[in-house]
Image 1 (tube, rainbow, N blue to C red):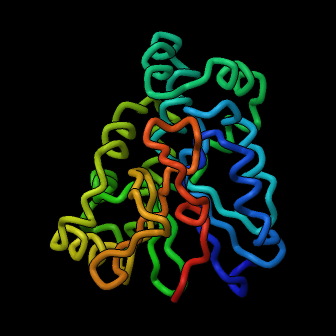
Image 2: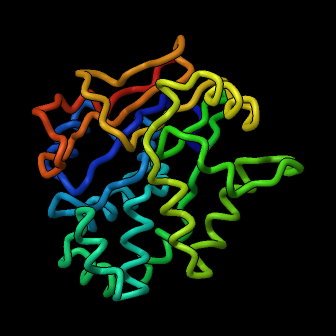
Length: 238
């Protein structure tokens, strides 16, 4: 159980293991519940290495990102490899993943959403596209969405996931949609990554009801601008 540990958020890593290791030095795994927001792969050269590290780090939770979806899609359907490489995929990573069936299965079972006991909702992208995977009558929308996402990956429906999880972050600019999403999911705030924010620390919006932890950590990311690692890897405050 990790409920007693403080929360450390790790935004989009995109294959930059060196910067990830440096960013995590102040945060021993035994002392933190580390939550990875997805998109550990693509752009950088060590995507599978980042996945394995997140998988093995004690007291950690890993979320599914749209780039993990794209990689699994390319793994299943070789006609998608060129497209996947156009969005940052590294062919050597795909070949390595193809040889590691346990890692593939672990990726397919990653949650899309996590709701903490304090009613903080954690997800990869800062939009409400996940609502496509729930019904209004679902008693627990977060559990229902996670179940549906796993079913989509199991049934070769990666395109639906990619479309829902690849839209731009809208919560910083659209307070009404943020408020509706928090109400639907019975949450008090939402934490996400996906779209680099350009700040020197995680960016908070609407009185802390939305927080972006994607500081473009990876030096291989097209929007990398010598961003400090603390813009992506930082404790989650109250």
